[in-house]
Image (cartoon, rainbow, N blue to C red; front, side, top):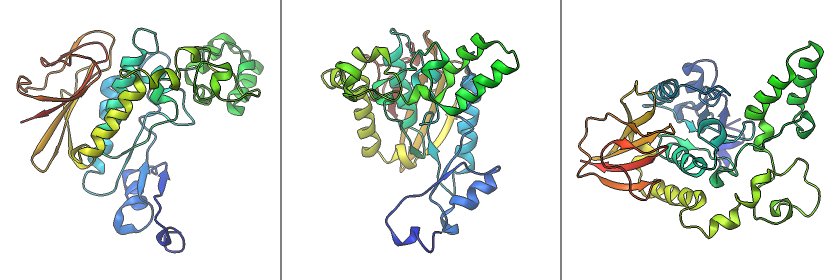
Length: 307
């Protein structure tokens, strides 16, 4: 396929699913194989559950995959796509108090890891799960078939509805929220699935006008990544691995070292890095006054340049 098609065009190819082993993944994407360009591994995206997830597990998974492809091959970095529920509802906190700040924190994570980040349509606004409460709201065939199966075996249907309200991919397929007009400005017709009712407060038009919006934060950190190759190619080193609330790591390239601190909780939380941040330079943060002590505000994200 590469010889007959891909090599003849300026295209990028992705191995959706990276095989059953790291060896499989390398056989698909290592440059000297002349097959595909990058691996798209699903292990991390399936961690989030309605009852929550372990941040230490998330760190282990991302660190393991980074290590396996540190010398050869190339990875995709993602936590959401068209087959997943919304990023901020699964890995962050979609309550009005924390939705924006936790969305920015997750964006910071995706844009500061080694690999090619994939970012799903609507997550730059902090779009949330739809809040569907009845099976009639869903369109996904897999979800509908499983509901019928649960019904046939006499299962607890309210429990199933609660689970799919968290994880069904239909949450990620509601119309994009352009503005506060009817159907979120997506269509003048009848959309194939309901618009999320929070579109009047979460939409692109409102966020364009707000310098502190999740949309404009997304733009700033994309620019930061493009302007700093250390965030693309730099060595990744996990710090404070067993910390259950914060994720800390460095990125190093050509004598530069950046430190990324992320609080995945709704409480203040420390990150033990062993570094003096007093003279560190803040490159970006999702709070107006980023932490310089290593103790992070709820869902705080900071990227520093350190000596």
